[in-house]
Image (tube, rainbow, N blue to C red; front, side, top):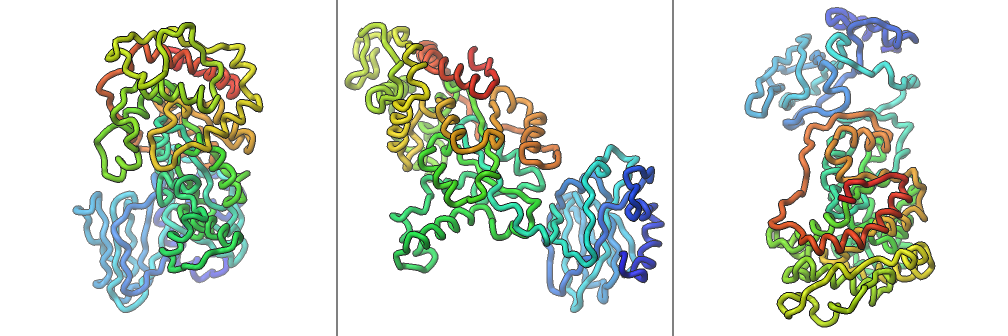
Length: 514
């Protein structure tokens, strides 16, 4: 535009007909302009012979606010150009692509083009906004002055400068957990933003059970047609490459305005494995953003139990869930884990019993069938012991002992431990800055997706974007509620942990107290 006056002279009449004032773009006073129409972008697009752009619709922040205009410039065989557009794939109509035919199209609708000719097809494509049609905030954005001849890289969703190559390493974010706290919904909401690219898997698990350890390197190498045992430095390179593949790390080097990440809710719990590996394979870990979704730990535990004991799902899902709890009642699993946390791992020495009417011994478990009566009111938290134990070396030792026993082959574990949010978050806060975390509550934020996503976009330093699909994901209905006595037991167990969590995060969770 600036270096070719002859091109400028040819394009100006088209802009004049459209009512676009190019002086708005050329002057330094664009923010003060009262022009009704402003140019967003102007480019020449070349489509090689024999190439088809399949049916799609455009996304991007500007798409909802701009008009898209095409001007065929070089079309040697217009009858062999199949350009179609329409509200749906079945309603698309062919558009005449004769040279000089100026047409506007709705690029939010479905469209596709095939160049069946023998020559390159070149279109002038421009996007402009009409400020009378709504509220636009383009004038409030940062303006970047490009150098003459500077190269740009464009996708349907982004425009990046080549000089910014690889300035945003992948991944950009992790949703760490908690399991059954709305992490799937949050991820599906996030990937609706045009600048967020979905990872190859929503739950990559590349830092826990898909971790490329020395024991499974042989299996991985067989898929890469390698067989030799690798030294430590070469193993690390493969571990890093294995993880990066989930996040399109190589492909996104050219497009630093695009972000990607995953939602693996087991990471929040498994800190002794995940944190060292994360720091090892992602050297930009200090720039990574973390999201943590929390939920009333009692409701979370019940939802967890309902999920892993459900017989509905694919064979792969059923295998991942495990079958350890499938023939146990919810209260049986609760009592068994309380016993293990206290006696096996020493993680809850403050969990006391007033009497010995009912013990954890033997099968326990169904007191009603064994002729006994469970008196759950006898159990309580000794707050003095709790306060002295929290943050102590003994707590850390017990916590590490517990984490070392976390199984990677089943989801039927840690029903109660996953709800000890204060303990888990303290582990993460020891290794990463607090401003890297956005902590959200299922009960408070997920019922209001709009304000929630404003926080999310701000945490990622992304422009605002209104999501369309706000339906809950991966939710389920329960056939029966939690028994009142076991619910009361769990409320007492979690109460001091939740109080410390509120102190840690400097916020309250009032709905958890109901």
